[in-house]
Length: 471
Image (cartoon, rainbow, N blue to C red; front, side, top):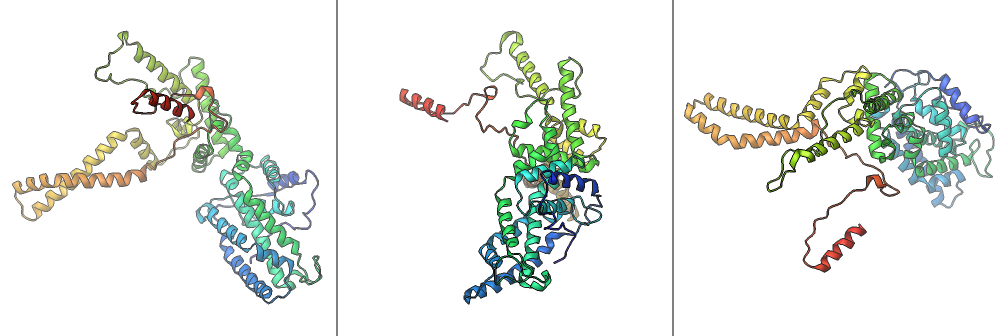
């Protein structure tokens, strides 16, 4: 296995109470970033680790079958071999090549910065990584240098990778004691020289501890972008569910990468826009985004048989309510990340989106005309092809007309199929934004739920009422 500069396990074993934070601050000052995409891919080296572990597993399984003495470290490996294989598979799944290449790289080490931090943290914690230590370490490091969203997402996988590489070194010493140096190790008689069997046990226990931790909570606790977004003036963002918050953060990540601005600054700019718009509306000034509110509350026409209220008071009330809802929406940070306000955010960042993004937004703003126009254009293209082919085969004008009439329905069918195949790729579907009401629905969010039911008797009315109340 390729050896890279890693912290010494024994010298880092005992740290003073504030040693973890001091180590993080020292690393933050010492680290110098290199160019992205030039890091050594440690995930590809897992093949060598797998081969080493399989060799050890076959060797010590054979000794156990022969009723021969097996070192305690090898027993730990045999009993937890399935766990190690699962962790290797998970690391590969969590660190695909495209994502790995985007991680910031340290110029001197030639490794992803987050891997070096994970290795340092695992060593300083004596291979007993707990969530509180991770939080303290990450926060102390980010007091000097912020970590990206991608790095924080990769932290659990990098911790697993660091522990796996340490486990590989221990197993390598178990198979070949001469590599670990001379001397008798602790652990009792029959243990290979130079090997510390508790190290293998510590690695396996640490892999188990990493596996059961709630890393989503740890991520949001240490992410500086998350702390900024939680300052949402509308106080809506903190009450959303994790998937919705993650969708917001991905927009921040994309804009930061495209504009070259730090993620934390992008998030703060979005919050500032929401706060500024909210303040201007409160003061009666012209808002930052003075667009006409879109709302289903504004009636377009009255259904047949309904009596229109005199004086037009209901439409005016609906219009006022729509304007109020729109004002609340523009005071929410999400309006500048997932709605029309994103153009104001891009302008504040001095970022011009590419033509493909602008086209996609135009199609989204003019969905009906874009859909019908595409069908019309493709249908005309198909009919033109039929007409040209008919004329090329020597057909008369009457024959061309007949071919066009016969081919109209097939051309429309083909056009619809093509449009329906392309639209989901141009405008991929997204999950609806959701609130997280784990502790119940607050009073300001209560609503009326209409349940269609066929009532045939008085008894049925009582049953329907009790069923709706129970749900």
